[in-house]
Amino acid sequence: MSTSLDTVGQGLLVYDGDCGFCTRTAAWLRRRLPKGFEIQPSQRIEKIEELGLDKMKVHEAAYWIDPDGRKHRGHRAIIRAVESSGGALGVMSKAAKVWPLDPLASWTYGVIARNRHRFPGATDHCHL
Image 1 (tube, rainbow, N blue to C red):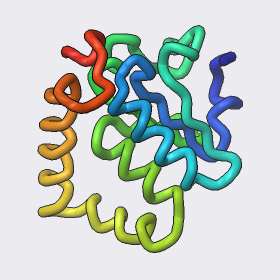
Image 2 (image 1 turned 60 degrees about the vertical axis):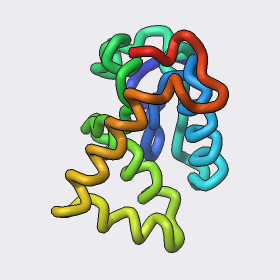
Image 3 (image 1 turned 180 degrees about the vertical axis):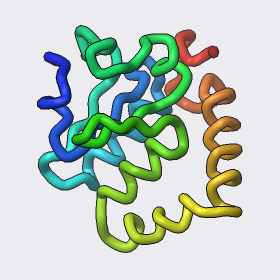
């Protein structure tokens, strides 16, 4: 994939494509996002640095990039993707941005990220 803000579309989710759990989550989101939104594994983005991302940090957490280049990391990236999917789930995801749900979402994302190697479909790459 060529990298530039032109390829972000209405929003771009970048995830670790070597992780089975991350790949299944991305596929679930891909089925729900309307056209114009992009989801790409970091491994398929040739010059990820042109998007202002670091290869190691993308291995640690997902990133959402808005069309204006603003980046959201970890739980906030997933919240932005779910929010962009629309529908009732998209509306409900907005609540996860405020206290006390935001810290809880951050904690939950961290627990999942640190333990993704324990989920079905995990690879050796899933160990942080």
